[in-house]
Image 1 (tube, helix red, strand yellow):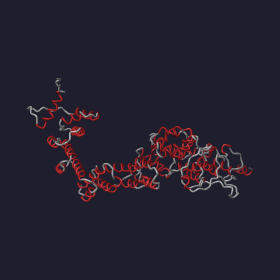
Image 2 (image 1 turned 135 degrees about the vertical axis):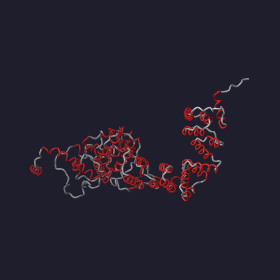
Image 3 (image 1 turned 90 degrees about the horizontal axis):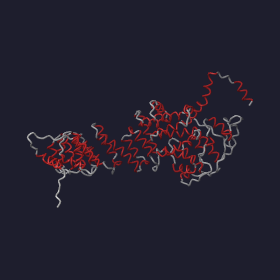
Image 4 (image 1 turned 90 degrees about the vertical axis):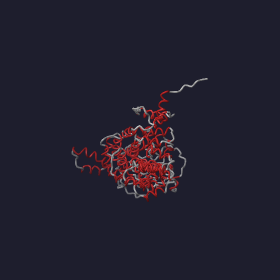
Length: 585
């Protein structure tokens, strides 16, 4: 005490202008230390065990009274000296037994906000025997200050139920950790307040149920220590943004004061995300500032793209590469749905053919649901590129079809895409490529149809006529030729080609809608009648809409009727007469 008094007498007086700045120093220093630990640049000192050197701890506080509310209480319900077990034992599913006190009870650390709190609290542990319960208590203290790696070190080898619970919580809070929802569900069944962690786990997996559950346990979230809340918010806010729940995101941020946000880079980041989700004009620029920080880069870039903001293609590809590599490290049984949501939706512009095929090779993406999503993404790119008028884009799609044959196997539309690509290759003067693509076809009809579609798109009337002559029994090619005649306004060609076409409702509706789109009105009345008599209400509505737009037929000057119009005129006459009465005998 005398030494303290002597040193206090030697301290220079504080001028009034410096008072506010000095008051802010502890918070700023604390924020700096927290960031350094997050970046792996610093590791905090750990308390010495009873077997360690008896020299005083460097950061032990002076002998002065300490607030009772931060005095450590080593009173876990089950003080276990659990024997060391193999690491694999932690993976075995065992029944969760409800303890007297939840392993996620952080009430003792609710006032923890800075490292000075930890140092003061830790001073009371000097001389304590190293036990399983003490290790778990230290882990909770570290988690309360966001020190996840230190918390994990304290419970290394602890295979008791409480140790496993805390280790799974560190897995949840780590950026790349995967939540064990089954375990969190068991814990929540014993303690309602622990539904918070089940909700966080669900949100980390992009499960909308997590948002609803969190809303129900908002008070339990607010009761957590500040830094633990901040770590949870770093998971929750981006997830709520992905799920489009801005109101809940805004409500969550009310659990932090403006001062707490100002002193925490994590909270500043999630606050910027929350503002972005609410449409704040300046939020996007604030988010861009986090692209330079590894800890926030992926979420920041994904959020910007999700809200339609541009980022550099190099950065987008770098982030996609990161996620693909992370997926590659997952076991085959792991769920990848949330990662695919992020990659294929938020970062879709960077996921081309090659990256999609890389994703398909990941063991964790081998399940049918994942492969279906990847194949759908691949097909969407193919359809766009095969309809392009750019040679290199067409060529890229052809190459992708050959490379992605395994991914697209047994999917509807695959053969049609190969046929279309083969037809385009032949038209572009690439016979070897056309031959390679044609080898994948099981019959020639698909190729002929694709060639007819291409001829129609290129308005190559001669090629279309040749294909029709070579395939006289192909109704599909004949329908394409009919649409071509409608577009050209060639009534004679239409009437000639219409022979042999089935006069069903779908065909009739297709023809009359093409007639309306072209504006030449060459389709006879009978097709309008067939479509209007459909038993489907939507088809009737579409047919009547086209009929209403159709102009009244012109009467020939000399009263003559063309032979090709006789059937349609008779049909109109019959309709105008209405139902013909029948004699009842």
